[in-house]
Amino acid sequence: GQNIDQPTEMTATEGAIVQINCTYQTSGFNGLFWYQQHAGEAPTFLSYNVLDGLEEKGRFSSFLSRSKGYSYLLLKELQMKDSASYLCAVRDLGIDQAGTALIFGKGTTLSVSS
Amino acid sequence: DSGVTQTPKHLITATGQRVTLRCSPRSGDLSVYWYQQSLDQGLQFLIQYYNGEERAKGNILERFSAQQFPDLHSELNLSSLELGDSALYFCASSVFGGEGTEAFFGQGTRLTVV
Image (tube, rainbow over all chains, first blue to last red; front, side):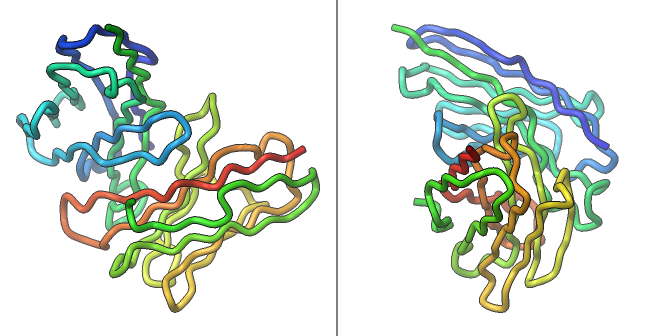
């Protein structure tokens, strides 16, 4: 099976940098995704990691260490609009042989204040 | 707009009833996923279809069923509804296969069971 852990809540101020951690256990790791979800809205894709290392995309970066079962999402130059839930999700070959089903953690609610 | 369409947006029904939620995936996407999101459980994976066939099963109750039709739209059927089934139900779609193929989410159907 799989187990995905993230902090429940985090707070930060505008302009700051915040790191949201995610640890996971899978039967057959096949990629890790980060999604952003504003309250009552659909999750939207932020980043994807399948190999170890850092992926940078503008103000957002995501890091993966497969040997440690660990990822983080780094948000720089925080803005008020970044207040949302951030969801860590993995693809697990233990769920289906093609490993395409996305399994989500409970998410981290980030509150950005001025 | 993700290109994934879900209907209806809101649904209010009584306990014991049956409802059908509909999802049209993005053009060209062969995989459809269904998720349930309640306040305390986060996004729970229910079931995945690929090109008309069931691909992976998550925490889907026996009272729930789904199917994907030849035109690739999908329906999620919820029967013998209970108060605890009240949640946001999301559909997502993706191109099957390949790495880095993120899932795109529809806006969800908010189901309220009274």
